[in-house]
Image (tube, rainbow, N blue to C red; front, side, top):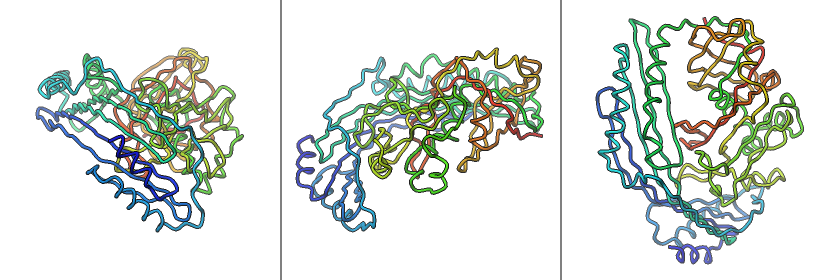
Length: 456
């Protein structure tokens, strides 16, 4: 295959050509309540050719049959020449690399039987169902995937990389009359089967929280000082700010260009936000992105000032900046677009106890059930929350919705915790029809003043 790829690249008539091949093995096991919902094993293989012609644009061909690569390159070149553009596409330069990245798994899940995987998930599901008679429904899912990616381009780069992933997710639904509450927990790593073992505490936490929420009162809406736990802080910075930092969005959106001006103050001196695609073991980590650019740490906000954004080669050339290794694709069926890797709020110096003690009446908001963002406006639903009264955590509350203007909210951060953690959730990020893309999020606790909370 190596020689066939090189031969196809050498014969290309395009100004730039890249070939990306993928082989993927995956298994899934899922229980819904008492019933086994899914037990499957899938093998998928295919590839993409992207060609660029300066008098045209991008031409893309995807395929499953990896024979006749030269023919695929010729087809993509024809498409590129037909894609006329008033503004020729340029690519920022990157290093030419040849690399082969392999992984060593403690327990390679490809050698674990589907029966053993089913038994593991069934055991977690029994814990969920058996926690309380008020648990009326559950979902417990296991998924693993092992991908082998080959990337080569006409500039001389040739990269082969192995990418493993294990995901475990649990959901519990509790009911007391008309009162129905739900809780969820998930865990994922770039690791072997061992990452999914010994997670009984995760299942128990899910079930306990669903039951506890039955007794929680809906929060009273208003304006509060709010402490976000690391999980919610990570989701907040990813959704509300991270997507605004993706340079394709900035380039294509005049309103975003006006907002995301480098050098603009976005927060206090102690606020730093970054994206890091090379921290080992995280879901968004790869040595190279899907254009062959080495990944790196990119500071987005440093000491409160906007200093960077995330790039592909194309957006870097358009904006006169350097590629950051953030061109990513969900799989070979999609062209790489600008995406986050592992996005985080850097640690500060304030302890959680010190954050609490200054609050007479506030909210401690934890986890996220999702949310919406529209440019600088956002709203998020926390998974659960507690009132803060006289500097102490008090009763659990539910239906906590945080809403506001991103820039005002960042300015209102008045404390960043010293307890930074990387999250390992099992979900993924969606953009441009590509989902779920594995990403990482990290944060310490953060405290924000004057947050608008929706509730009763």
